[in-house]
Length: 513
Image (cartoon, rainbow, N blue to C red; front, side, top):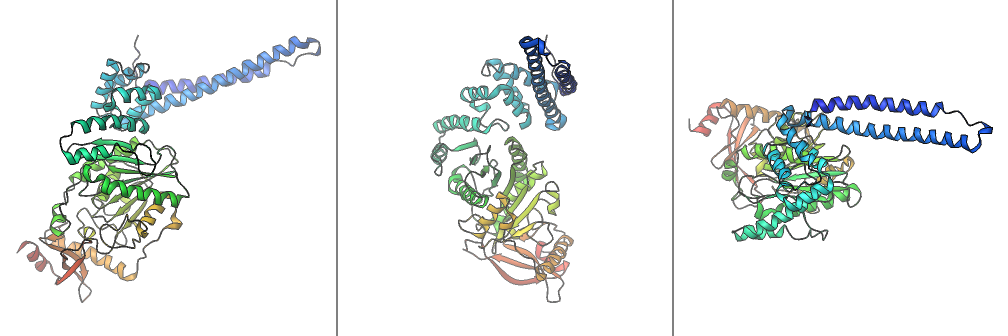
């Protein structure tokens, strides 16, 4: 007879197990207390009887402990299944989980593989996938990774070590069939050993479609006290991963380990698990063309799922770091349900919120960095500047200039990022807010309203021009036009000198009215 599995059934078993546990403990106490001390005349036989009763009491106690542990496990599984996918987990999905668990001794049997494929097609959450992996056991998941790597390597919720193995198998297949030479070289690089450890690279995810997505883990997720997820911005894809994202993540890992007090205390996930927009060149016009929030919203959903799939422990610190457009993706991930201990926005065009309090739980730490001459931060394409005073973010020093100043070896910005990852607030170099900046923040809000009144809310650019809220000579809200200086790698800003301090003039400038 097949017993239907559902969260209510598991919860009922947990309650029954609690009652049984209490009863067993009472029986153990009763057995231990009922045996009289052997009389002197009883000799060896009496002592043996007492010893037998003591042993029986110990056995009952151990049984109670095992029953208690089983009860807690079953209750946790029931709660996880009930909460998974927002409580919308259907009986069909539970039946698939039961089928897979029943095949734990033969996880690669056709019926088990078919059930697992059906479960993944149903959009099972990482929590449900983790339950499946636990039911298969370590040996079962390892066999599955070798025989059907596509069911382990790209699947959030599967054990990371098994995903690394499965993805190496998948990478060999991808290299063999990739027709494009540049992409084939990029895939082959992922099969090389890690230059810092000499061991195989820990590729958590790879998908060569579209621009190409890659996620690599540096360090050990299972033993690190702090885990940082580094999310890059525009212009990154499969072919640039090893020239840009990977090296910066390794720099961060080394700096974070130093800040934390020694090797192995932190881990960094280089997360290019989404398709950021292309960036043919960095300039005002290209920045304006890259204000589509669609990839960030989609990436945020994927990032929130991926972070859940890491299955970090309650004592491990999780930090999400977004650079440029990646900070917008981080904001979207937190809005989609990710719960980091800290969020860092570096060179951000906006994080989809008005105030830091809208990102994460009450205990979440919020940090921001904005280097002088970083043109991207001036677009405010995805919300107000998180680096402005009063944003709720803790502002950190960068010590450099330009949009690429944040992950440079030996920089103040890198040291600050490392301190955030390691959870070392005393090592942070904060950027103070002076009276002039506080006043400028008030003017910025008034300038933003000026733009909105002109009928172009959220638009801060026209053609090659940026619009920057300022105070005019009288101290009133105004807007000054600026243009990027041609040929500067750091995107320095050159003021044109045209100040607009009324709605009519601004509307005329924006729309030719």
